[in-house]
Image 1 (cartoon, rainbow, N blue to C red):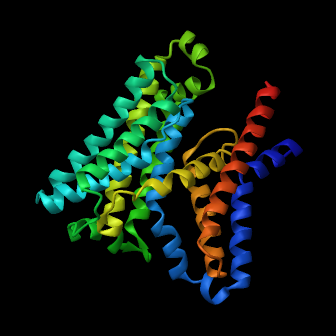
Image 2 (image 1 turned 60 degrees about the horizontal axis):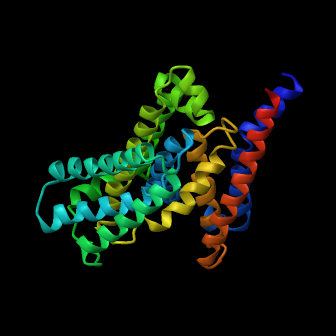
Length: 320
């Protein structure tokens, strides 16, 4: 293996090494609290929703678009799940397909407005997300709704495998599916070509509009899945539940683009990035830092991740 190969492999797995170092550091400082299986099962099981939101984000990001509405899709779907199940008495078998269709519909609306009116996706999804927040406040009367079916809670957090809530495994299954689509399907390649240069992709025969529209729909669906899981995690829905997830999800998406496949948004890198960030927050909490450190950590990680991913992308561009 040459020097370039070693350098590339170090770059690919650099975040993994830093994550391991972080675990060892916190473990050395608080071995009785941090280095316990219950703590690690909490780390892995409690952030399945964040993993799914991050995976949803990287689909339009790969195509060169942003989806700032995904957190509000989560919130609206979570609230809709609670209303349909608790207030209207619908079973989960009826409720879940309905709320998933809500996510698909919102994703389609984002895509059609962006494509038809040629407005930047950043503006469209910001506006749609704000509108959805208003809808959520309206239908919930700004109140938390509790009493969701225990079946949903059992299927998300109560049932455990190796001590980890089953919601974690749902996130890993979705990650595997997205990885397969990105790596082994024509759509995954078209998504990548579209993100690298829409005009070039169009000239090579890629239906750029359809690719971008499908990416928004997929993002909306992932936001809806995250909303259902969030409701199952808490057993309730509140009108601001998903808002705080947008910043860490973007931080994880850009940080994930610095590992596994540097310079490219990728699902496994995103999962590693989520748990790297969560490990940092968990470790600082164990050390006694107050809650404000979460915003400092996520905000700083987002800035650093964007800078590093831009440096990697720029270096790769110069190498061609």
